[in-house]
Amino acid sequence: MDGHKITDVLNGSIAEEAGVEKNDILLAINGTEITDVIDYIEWMESEELELHIRKADGEEWIIDIEKEPGEDLGLKFEYDLMDKERYCRNKCIFCFVDQLPKGMRDSLYYKDDDWRLSFLVGNYITLTNLSECDVDRIVEKHISPLYISVHTTNPELRKRMLNNRFAGDVLDYLYRMADAGIQLHTQIVLCPGWNDGAELDRTISDLWELRKSVQSLAVVPVGLTGHMENLAALKPFEPNQAAEVIRQVEGWQKRFRSQWDRGFVYAADEFYVLAGADFTP
Image (cartoon, rainbow, N blue to C red):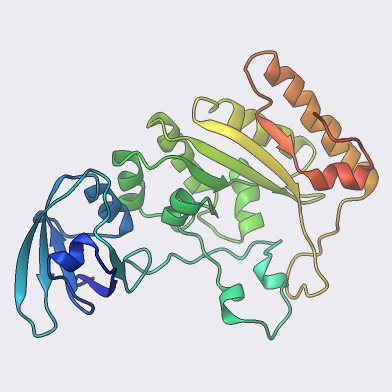
C-alpha cells in the first residue's frame, strides 16, 4: 500500500500538536515503511519517532516526535489493521457463516481468518491463508499468543474437513511457531463420524507433544442450524455421544494433570449439558 490514510486525529493528541491532519498519508516511521498495525504498535514503544507524512496538497513533511514509551500518537486510519483484513479461504463442512439465514446485515457473512486479529482480539485462525512472509513475521516479532482452529492433526482429514488442499500441509506452521516459543491456544470443532473417537485421541496426543507452546485445547461440539445448504450431512451429538466425549477428554485430563499443572484439554459446557452431567470444578 502507498502509505496509510489518516481518517482522524484525536483532539489534544501528540499528532495534533505536531501538525498531523485528517486525510494526511503516513508514509513511513523512522525511515521504515509500515506494513500494518503490528508494525505501528511496535513503533509506539519508541521514545523518538520520525514521521514521514504526505499532506493533502502533495507536500511531504518529516516530523520529529519525542514521547513516552507506549504512548499513542492519537491517529485513526482508514483500515483498523492499516491493511485489508485476510478472509477465510476454506469451505469447512461445518461453516457457521454458511449456516446463517439470508437477509441479515452484510458484516455477519464476512469470514475473517486474520492472524493479526488472532493476536489482537483472540480470533481463531486456520493457518490456511498464511504466506511464508506472514510466518516469518510472526516468528521474528514473536507474535504471541495466537489462537488456532486445528480440528484435526490428520493432514488428509483436515483437507477434507476444511475443503482446502493446503489445510494439511500448513500444520507444519504449528511446529515452526512452537520452535519459536509462540504460545498457542487451540480448538477442535468436533463432528460426529469425522474427527471424534480415535481421531480425537490422535489430535490430543499430537498437540500434547507441543505443550511447551500449546497452552490449551478446547473441544466444542459442531453447531448446526436449519439453514444448512451445500454442506456435509452432519448430525448433532446425541446425549450418549456427548457422555463419551466427556469420558474421553477427562481421561486425558487425568493423565495430563499427573504430569503437568493443568488439564490441557477441555470439553465445552455444551457437552455436559447434552449429557446431563455435572460440571467439573
